[in-house]
Image (cartoon, rainbow, N blue to C red):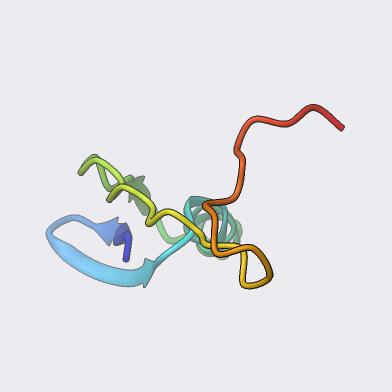
Length: 66
């Protein structure tokens, strides 16, 4: 899981899995007068497992255009 942080100096105020949630929290704190900033998680995302279609037993096709 990702760990985006909202920081106040060296103190962690909030930690979120989604960057947009951390940004919204930081914006709300800034509106209250708290000078905080967002530190996004820079670790690479883990690779996704291949999904198997339960009807055919074959891997699902990726990259289809709808």
